[in-house]
Amino acid sequence: MADDVSVAELVLAARGGQQSAWDDLVVRFMPLVHGIVRRYRLQGPDVEDVVQTLWLRLVEHLDDLREPAALPGWIVATARNECLRLLRARRRTQPVDPLGPGIDHEPPEAAQLDEEVAEDLDHAARHELLLGAFGELSSQHRELLLVLVEDPPPSYAEISARLGIPIGSIGPTRARALQRIRQNSAVAAWIAGSPEG
Image: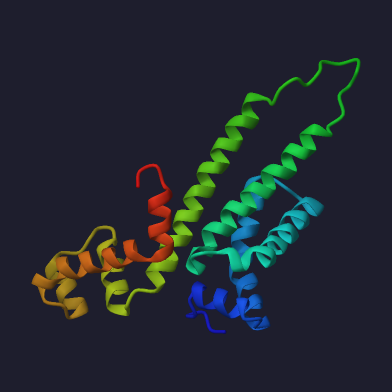
C-alpha cells in the first residue's frame, strides 16, 4: 500500500486479513518500536523479545482497538510496558553476591531513568499522533501550518503571496486546520485521556 494510506485504513485492512496491510503496519511502525526499545537500552535477544511480543499482542488485540487511528499510541504504550516488564524480570533474577552488599532497592538513577524514558515515550506518542493527524489534513492546511512554524515566521503578506491565500483568511484557515487536528479521533482520544484534557 502507498505511504498516503492512513493508519486507520491499514488497521481495517489488516483486520480483514490483508497480509499487505500487516506488512505495511510493520514497516511503518518498526522504527518507532526500535526507537522505544533503544531508549530502554535493551540489546540483542531482549530487543527481539520485545518486538516479537509487541507484534503478537497486536495480532491478539487488533480487533479490540476502538479507534484504529490510535494505533501509534497503542504501539508506544505496549512497547513501553513490554520493556518495563522485561527490565523488572531481569532485576528480579539478578544474582546477588553473598559476600558483597545486597541489592535491596532500585538505584535512584534507575528510577530517574524510568521517568525520563516515560517522558520521552509520551513525547514520541504525542508526536506520532500529531503527525498522523497532520498527514490527514488537506494539502492547503498542511502547507499553511508548515509556513506558520518557520523560524523566523513570515509575515501574513509573505504567506499570502507564497500560498495564494488572502491575508484575511490566513487566521481562520489556520484555526480550521488546528480544529481538524484536535478532532482527529486518535488526537481527541489522547486529549480526553491526558491530565490536561
